[in-house]
Length: 111
Length: 118
Image 1 (cartoon, each protein chain N blue to C red):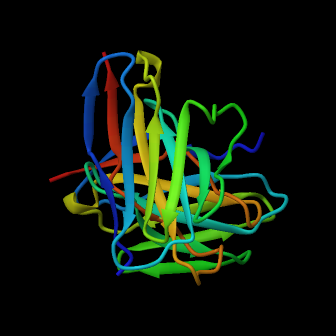
Image 2: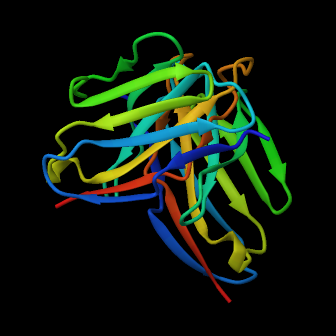
């Protein structure tokens, strides 16, 4: 059974703080990794697609890195804002069949 | 673009009722749609992969007679929970892939359906 772990499960940060979360996945048979941002009562929105070891992607204040050899990806948020409050999901793809989701990291940014 | 509409958002019904959930791709054609279920504090678990014009592929442990999937067009897939019982209460969410999108690209999700069986 392939397992995808995300940590922490939840965290609260103050507005302006920078933060990061981890997605751990099996280091064998890597195909792709996705990061999604999921706000309450909305649909998950894709943030990043990571495919190559060493990938670094950036979108505004949010960035992600990928290490396929050791099986982890980090998501960073610089200068957190209240509108960043959401659940951040990662999804690991071991091949062209399906993606396996982590349980998510629930972020609350306090004003 | 790439909007997926899921309906209904909430369903509360009595035990023994069958419930149909619709997943529509509004501005693209989707040959493949995925149905997930999420229990509290757990991850999205793939239930089945729905392919237009053919039978759905169910994940291990998912009863195909319990969760009927129909994907009759390139823009609509339905999940019917037949004779629902309280243990079927969960959050169900669909996603869709565009026809020409490589598999490494992300899925487009609906907003999900909260199903409560009394």
